Length: 256
Image (tube, rainbow, N blue to C red; front, side, top):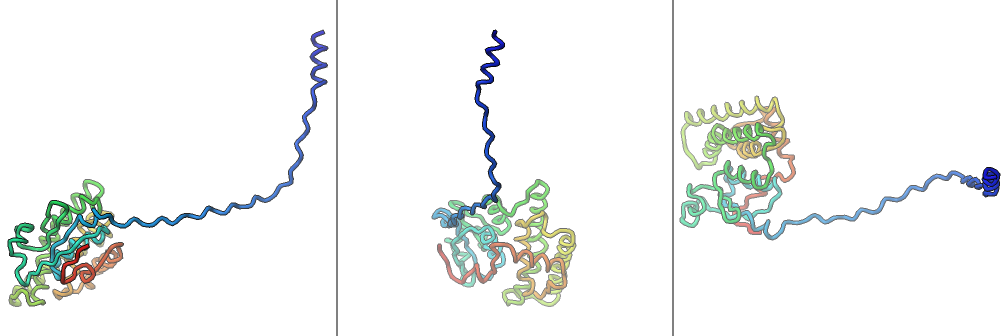
């Protein structure tokens, strides 16, 4: 009796109708929503006021510090220190730089001096142009010190002689020329094995060395005789933010 009732119930249930076939149509591609242009954020007032560079327009070390700030794309004010009139020896400036030299860099309430130290400070606080691994950091520091110990002294002495700001005879000139070429040969060997100095990417070692070799021609040294150095110099000049001394260092103060 129960089985008969169950069969009757099943028979009385309506059968589901098959879904009608829908003819396939090509899906109309949706147009991508227009992307709203986002205006690039300009420097804030605090960023503009943070750095002030004190220097002299034809100073290689001053250019090195200015170049680092430019490569980091950080704004800075520039205060012209007239070396020809002895402004670097006045009490007002000696408070900033006890060595009576340029450059000096004010960062907020502190002042950093010596080009290599300024590069290290900027690399640390801005977290740019530094080595990524402990080994790279060590190598970058070594090359940074080498640049001012072995490369800068002879190159800048030769340049100063050609500009008439230093006077010495041919014997001393030959000594500096020999030292400069020996240092550049060391660099040539290094750049035959790597694109950048001390690290896989540009670092403050590259900034320091470029800040010296920019003036090698004025000292009578043709870098075309060093193909790997010349290729590196070209790569460096293609970095975003690169600028020449003439673009960065005017002969008067510039506030922002």
